[in-house]
Length: 458
Image 1 (cartoon, rainbow, N blue to C red):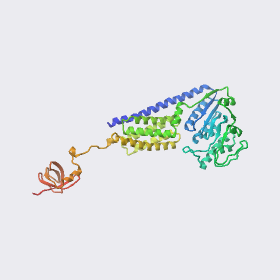
Image 2 (spheres, rainbow, N blue to C red; image 1 turned 30 degrees about the vertical axis):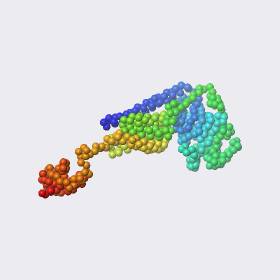
Image 3 (cartoon, rainbow, N blue to C red; image 1 turned 135 degrees about the vertical axis):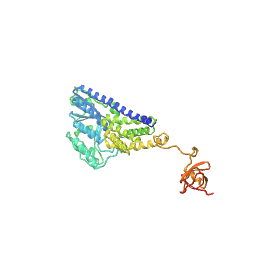
Image 4 (cartoon, one colour; image 1 turned 90 degrees about the vertical axis):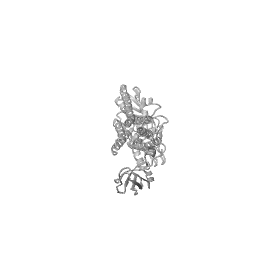
């Protein structure tokens, strides 16, 4: 019966492996097909949108888009920027991708290039802005609280990054400084007609950016930008995130990632400890599959992270049934943690999510186990049979009732043997003397299962 339940409990893991392989194969093949088809355009202008929060999913999409443009030997790349910013780490990586691109890049600000969006635009070779668009307000903000970060070291580091990006194409570094640091007054040029005061961060309109050299042109549309660049006769290739990439961008969000880990750990644990439910195993399997699918499509997870994760789960399962003094459990835990953290863009964030998920999953499993006491696998290791008086057994505490009673020796007591008291056969001992068979005896001491008798002299 135990092996049968173990077999059923293993089904979710077979599903997990099958789902992961299928998802990675299908979407990996789709991405490869998209890359191949892009090569057919020849010399062209590639239009790539930056119209979402700056995070790891956007970074992965841009890496794919730039690679396709390079393989197709594109003439130019136009980044259509409209974002309120996002993660500084992702912005820095995207900035490096842009400035290292062998293909010239123009950033077209279509609406807003705020915060990290400003940094992305400054790394482009040229900036073109739509009328009524804005650029700037790049102070460092705590993503969790939404408040400005006041740490001088953090501000200084980001000011330096912004200034370096501005100076790439000869832009006045004072404006980059004024966009980041709210703590000081900054004297700006006469062209702007105003200075930056302490407590403020600078934002430039399209006309102001043009005046101070933070944009090279103003255009109503992408087509006008391409015409201004002199590429109106070239093919235009618009690259957008695939459905898989849009789903992956949502799945790699730290909150969503943590929820998936909670559901995955709790679902698999419940299925293992209380086999037969079915639903928890399916939910747990799908949650883990979605976690690795999202990180694979986003470009972070590889086959090694999936293998480590599955090996870790397998070792933890084996530990439940094969005593190993905790060795298999430790190895399984390390392997599982390594698989999850290696699959993420930020290992520390993934580790924190995993810790939170473990704690939450333990609470969920404890609640489910408490409400299903009779179904848990742990009941296989608990002795439930009771040796009751109704079943013909005499409990230990009832021996005290024999004190002072008399009976007959059914066997010779040397010094132990069997006597009959009333209608019961009782195992007894003497204080050391020998008592022959059929001699009368009396109980002089009874403690627990220990009954002491002596011969009754007639």
